Length: 511
Image (cartoon, rainbow, N blue to C red; front, side, top):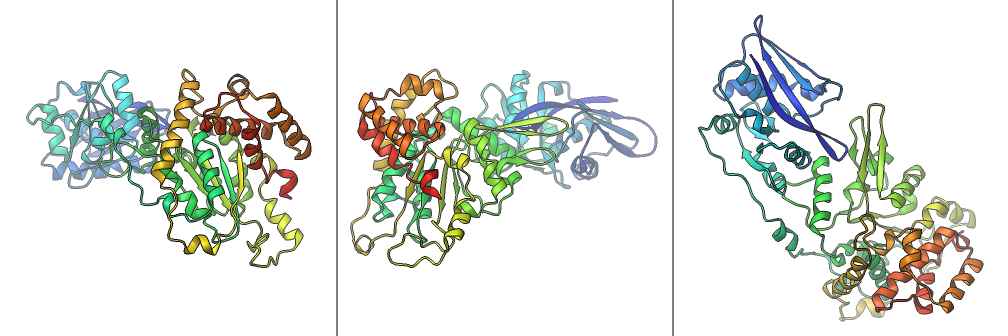
């Protein structure tokens, strides 16, 4: 007998339907899986055979052929165990499931028949909804993640026997539901607060400007000045995620398998901090079956690169295109996968190899050539794509010993939210641009008017500081954000002056 069961798989950020055809015939007991299965899929025949026995059923005693269609796409992972098991039971005529075509299913099976969680459930459920399926069976631990998709019933199962009883009508499993609006409204608690940062008022001001406009920022200073401490508190002042942004981030983390058990939604902005030994594939994503890298896992959040010059040169250079386009494309012989990666880059570094160049209390032991080689690890084109460069000096003893706490993150976040609200109104209707940092040349011309006296300042900066055309646009974008924070419609000289100060490490002063 021939049985057809519907499941799904993921390539890139999108899912596609996998139709599992199971034919139970005669002959010696054997199972053959065709349709470009990988090792994990080929091994599923042994897991499924044992799970069927331990669930109280009889494994097919003849020759069983399992086809995974479309046959020209490689299938990976253990997510087909549950539908294969159900298909084998139907094909061997042990159960009769007349409504089987109305449901999709996904899940890994333990040898006991228990259904285990898998990755990529969210995009697969979205694809099942698009196809008009009435419901989908998912592992219990993936149920909340799948339930964020409206318009399709999500039935959590814990065991193969439970799944069969539900499909046959002998057992009812209520659809799992979650309140998306309530999840997005949840107030995120942050253990780290800017009130703990003593001194460094200029750095905190620059961070507020960067977060308000979504600008990339580079902090340069000696060890122990609080660069990492400040960076880890940026998440506490980021504006809340909109529902659409949360779904985008959750989809990526679902594919990567980084969602926690029973987690429904990524409701707080991601903060990723990879080690400087990360490879270009680890940063951008890759593999024979491409998975998202750190830049995509930081989508709609923050990517923090500490000790920036210690990263491999080729790893830093591959950041240039994602920073510009907001997406990364991974080409393979079989297909091409595109992952979104609109993130705020926060980087930190020492001014020289020993770390104490320019420090009034410690002597730098580096030669001029060592300093130049160290700093040249960051190329000019990459530096151009970082909107704000600031110096973070050593903290004075008076600031450290004082009992006065800094401004709390909650107060800063309110000002950031007000600036972002202005930008949301400005870019309403723009699908690609959501904040000032994302403006292209057309948006800069339309939404960033510069006063005549401010134009003179820009002209002088272009001449004396040798700004590139890209750096010129970055200055205008940052000045637009500063003007928004001040409630100004037109960019004035005071806004441009502050924005130029944030380019003090540009190429002519950098080397």
